Image (cartoon, rainbow, N blue to C red; front, side, top):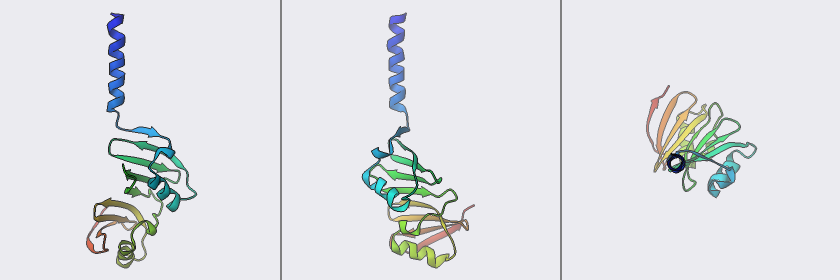
Length: 142
C-alpha cells in the first residue's frame, strides 16, 4: 500500500502545480518593459507582489495601484484604487480627448484592447477612445 501511495501523492502534487493559475514571482522577473513602465510612472512606489499566469502578469504596488501586463510586457490594464493614474500613460491624442471631454476629472482605470482605450474617470464615466483620440462612446459606470 505504501508503494502505491507515495507515487500517487507525487503525481497529484505535480499535477496541482501544473494547473495552478497564479505563481508569485520576484519583481525582477517581470519583462523589462513592464519594469521600466512601473519605474517611469511610479518611481517612488514599491512593488508589493508580482504574479504570473498563463496569459499575463499582475502587479500590485504599495500605493494600491494594480497593473496587468500582457506576457510581452505591454500594458493591458491599470486600476488606481483611489489613486489618480497619470495622464502621461495615455498617448497624447487619447489624453487630449479625455481632458477635452471631462476637463476636471481624474483617471481611475485604463484598459487597453488592441486599438481601443477604455478610460474610467472619477465622475463614474467610462470613455471609449480609439488610438487616434476619436471618442467612440461613453457611459455612466457605477
